[in-house]
Structures are given as C-alpha cells and as structure tokens.
Image (cartoon, rainbow, N blue to C red; front, side):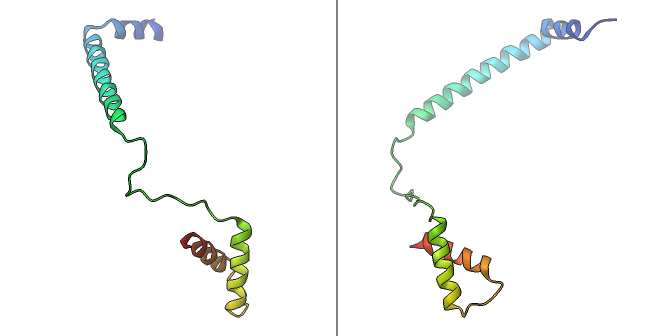
Length: 94
C-alpha cells in the first residue's frame, strides 16, 4: 500500500502536472508584472474627484445633537435610536 507522500511525489513528477506548473508559474509572473506596472502608474495624491472624508463625529457630539432633537420633537418616548441616527446624519452633513 502506498502512502500519501508517494502519491504526491508521483503526481509532482508526472509530465502533465509539470507542464501545468510551468504554465501557471509563467502566467503568475506575467500577472505580477502587470500589477507592478499598474501600481507605478497610480497617482500619489487623490484626484480632485475624490472627496476628502471627514472624521466621524464623536459620540458626545452625537448625544448632544440627539438630545436637542428629542427636545425639539416634544420629548417623544421610544425614538432614541431614530434621534441618534438623525443626529449622526446631520453632523456628518455639516
């Protein structure tokens, strides 16, 4: 009975697998060369079309805004999450 390593060694030594491995290595080298050439063409600075992202508002700022929304809407119960998300959205927009 042969063990797994014997089977693997026979597969590695087979002519078909050898051709496949050579072709795969060549394709990988070509792909790596393409990736490297593309990477060198990328600009170092973001283009004008890319918006600069703002820092996320702090939880304290969101809490304060949510409290103000809660007060302005008549202190309605059960709207804490909606007020929080509304406050977060408003702060991100400003």
